[in-house]
Length: 89
Image 1 (cartoon, helix red, strand yellow):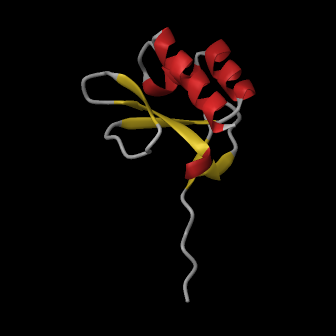
Image 2 (tube, helix red, strand yellow):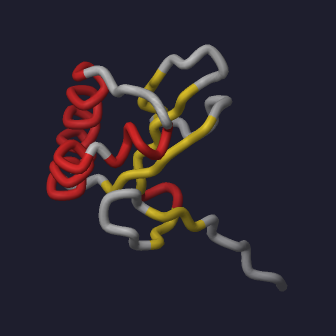
């Protein structure tokens, strides 16, 4: 019997590969709207971040999310990420 392959993704803050389900996805759709995708199924360009406050702080400080998605990130997205990280604990 074949083992099911676990999809891995890389955190944009700490550059560690982790299972997709352990990470939080941020999506930019075709219209340029940014959303926090907790389902992992929204259409659009995605970036992943660990469910860790240190990684969030690093992303905010270095503007890595803005560079990865090539768009300015509104503060409300960072607030949603912070809430998602708190809820995951």
